[in-house]
Length: 50
Image 1 (tube, rainbow, N blue to C red):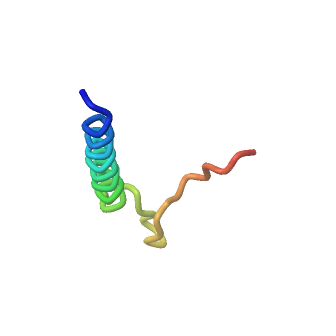
Image 2: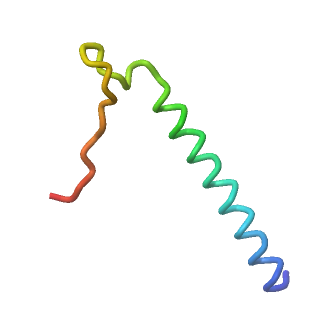
């Protein structure tokens, strides 16, 4: 496999992976259990380092 074909394959794989991650993130945000029932706010997880 040539270097150009390898780079093209990696770029294609990256685009597919980013698309799947975006679709999954959008799906999780649309789920009803993510929302707080009292205020209707989205519950966000704190991922900042301690």
